[in-house]
Length: 251
Image (cartoon, rainbow, N blue to C red; front, side, top):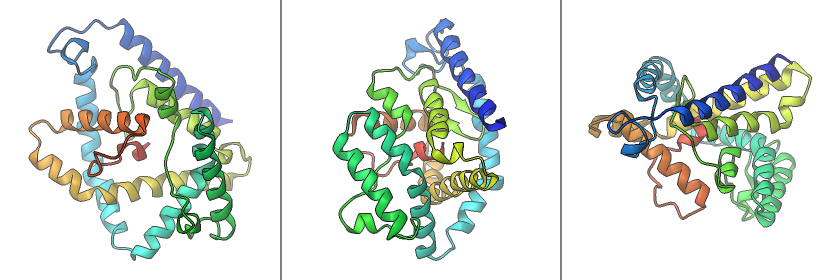
């Protein structure tokens, strides 16, 4: 019940952000609509970004570096388990986006990896030609034509404009683990999110370091790349940004 109250609070927060963004009339140069950034809360977002950078350097990055020292097979197995636990959410969004063939493949992946893959430790589905893909409710809303809303940089979680914040909360609620009454399910869900975040951070260690070193404005660079990556995912286009960090997975 407490978890439900938390996600309801996040949903209300997203609604307030959307309404606040609509009520704001930013002027050119203030990070608003007229200069193309749609970032009416840029001063606050930059402060949160700076705080998150400190947390990353003190905790998340060292954890990712330590994780990277694990054997590759171990990391692959952990990634497979995390992805398998998320397949029901991916399946739901495949259905909501009217992709019956993709949804069928996702369901088949979940069944195969949960059984023959030993609860996802092995990705036997990919070996059979059923490649993994990611979908979330933020993408679904984008496919439905819902606008992104004003840019927002959430504490700890990173970029989460209202559309993606709503999607993040809905994905939590639609995961079957959320509704399992046993405390163990909550631990599994929390563990999944932690491992997912650390795994993704490890895979972009060099990329983010290079971006920070070469960017004139690291905050603006992250904002731009996040939007490009999200738009690419919504369009289901070919990966012309294959070297970009997968910012969506930090949610």
